[in-house]
Image 1 (spheres, one colour):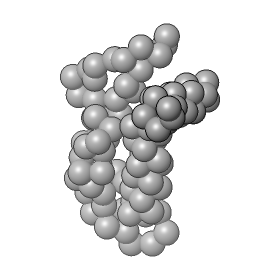
Image 2 (cartoon, helix red, strand yellow):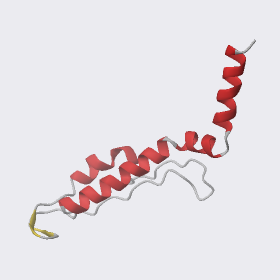
Image 3 (tube, rainbow, N blue to C red):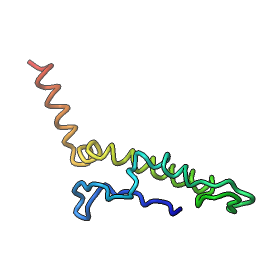
Length: 99
């Protein structure tokens, strides 16, 4: 069986996008791809049914985990980039702790 496509959570203009039928949500990737892993007979040679060697599976899932972390941290990173989180924090400190 073919390895399913990963869902890109963004449209080209970076607005949120729903996954198309057959695409794998980023949070389900390791579970879904594990079903496509084979046993190897030698370096990168599958001896059983499957399309991904254990090494390829590890590389893909590691990359997806990093991508998922960045996706989940996106709002914070944008706030950090434009300093709004710093301004918000100082405003809250000023409001709550200054006379």
